[in-house]
Length: 303
Image (cartoon, rainbow, N blue to C red; front, side):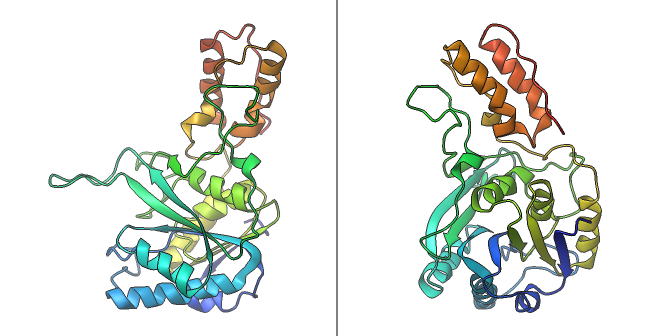
């Protein structure tokens, strides 16, 4: 496993206490939602107040280890997200930035009531001065205008990524595995190369896999020994691209009528949007041809 990555088997509260204060650039994590999920050697079946106290304790440690310019992205289910928001803002004094909605097409089916098709992610910063790399996470414009940034648009706070289906080769034996592209966007936006990213609930290891492929340092904490072994094996696999993509990355803007401007854009598109998504390059080249943008430009991704 890469020396820049570390997976620690243990209770997150105990491990967090050993991490130096203000040493972490970014925290991205998907903690238990207290919905009685089976995590192998444990279930998230706390009493209401016990769960909130547990959340309060680990979030307090996270604030301590974050650098002054640091950020936390926290997945949370609807039942407890308002309580966690209160802990972060009112009790810990962190700064709210974004409430991100991750939309997906498949999920639990209901016959009474509406079936859930989204998860939520809270983004808080330790201070008002924080790191955010917008250019690293822009998405292609639908229409190009001279006033637009050629590099693309802000992706907004509603994100559409497919679930990791059980038939996918990258599917791990974990009940709440999240798509790599979700973590890619958060990690690229709020950290730089060689920065230290922490995941106190590492689960299937998605955060560390993305750190590995985006040149970040990473620390993952996981209480289940079987999951730790699974993460180590995952990190040793050859990389062939992240397991999901925002489909907007595969499009080319309409109205790129200036030939020189169009050639410049097409030449840069892969580096900007698809360097970690080689499986999407064919769809992008098809989009070029569909727009009838003249001669075909051969695209190549250096892996």
